Image (cartoon, rainbow, N blue to C red; front, side, top):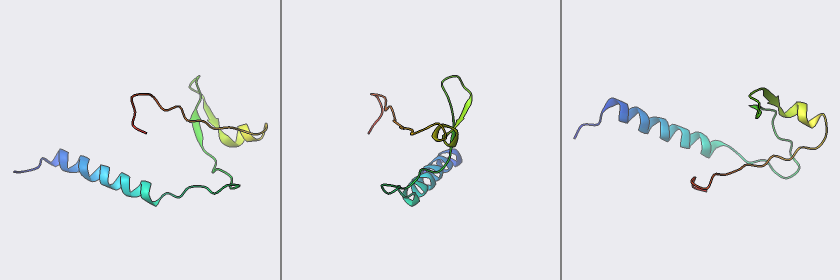
Amino acid sequence: MRISPLLRSIVLAVLLSLTWVGLATALEVGQKAPDFTLNGTDGKPVKLSDLTAKGPVVIYTFIAAFTPT
């Protein structure tokens, strides 16, 4: 059975992404989070450093009911 080039590319991309996830390390208690930028609810970019300049920040992830945890 031959595997299509598209399927082969998808499998390779998934394996590479899993490898990158495995290389990531978690922060220890007391370490500062690296600065990052995400879009806010209004679509405008929001930087973590801009928020922490105003005071403490709590980051919470909302996991949808239909996603595996």
